[in-house]
Length: 456
Ligand SMILES: Cc1ncc(COP(=O)(O)O)c(C=O)c1O
Image 1 (tube, rainbow, N blue to C red):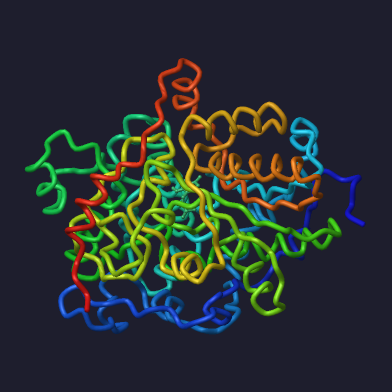
Image 2: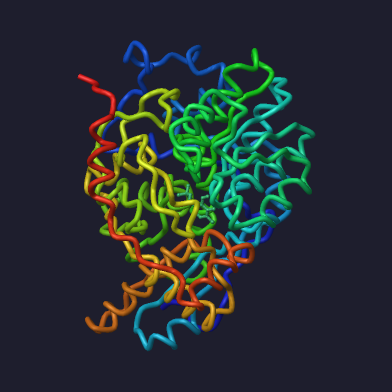
């Protein structure tokens, strides 16, 4: 019998999992190799060493099922972890659904999202190897805030290329990063060759995550080894650091005496959804469970539902190694939806592989229906979701309504990966009727996909 009495399922600090879960140990087939952009041969650890510290490169290719979380990282995690698992009783009631809805709430971190789970780990491993400075990009500003905070904790310099449209939409995110001591630029900038090449073609360019990555990678690559690059999503080690979410959720669901039929999350690069879902996917693969896994993405940038599964660059200009992933084309610039963290042309290779193998389903949603769900959630549960997280909320509400129609007591688990306290301009625009739905930009995607690298 599920626990129908409690609203929150909490773990104490001593119960926080001591390891991250590495899904590479349980995949139905080995991941495709990462390729060198010039030779198109598999990259070696040395190829990646100008950008990342060796500890993270080794995590990237590890097939160990569990990797121990270093003590200094665990200690910082306890500033906000273990995060609570909520039973969404009030939302269930509002929807009049027989479904039981649970959400893990990552908005309790100091910056308001799941992003510090990897930012702290990345800063730690870089610091251990003597790196003084990290460069990165940020879309919504959640990732930039997380790395800026980690930089403050480990006394490292942080330089951030913030997508220009988000820089304008979210000035307070920039202020927060600066409060932690980071330097923030509106990208594209004229500080890098990558930025200048974009501005030469389009001086009004509002930026994208792919452009920000090009700029941040260039800063690291040209630093002579003093600066490394840090990415907030997509890469295997980043997804692995986020599995602390799902490892906690496994224990908390046990405490609730329940188990999910479906695990739902929003996907930009795939890290928060990997975080909640991978430990459950691992269990499903090992035990033959029939759990469903549903990824929610924006209709304006639907990399899983509409992308090609092929080798592509991780950035816009074409400087990164080639990874096999669902992609809309590396130079596709998504429309300026308010879920800035979901405006990425690609999807994590691990998430792409799982989608391609039929293990993870995906669904794309229009912006207006996403905000409608976010408001409904806020009025029922009190938490105002980040626009990214609101995509997951939309998917959860749809599943709960389907359960009602079918008269089934489905158990739905989701990750509410961030709060929207810095996103109120988006809510303001929604209430003022100024938000629009963007149709799937089929033509722009088809054009961008024609410019993808050819890998035979
Ligand atoms: C709150 C929030 N959720 C989700 C995302 C999307 O990234 P990912 O798919 O890696 O979780 C972002 C990215 O910036 C974000 O800020």
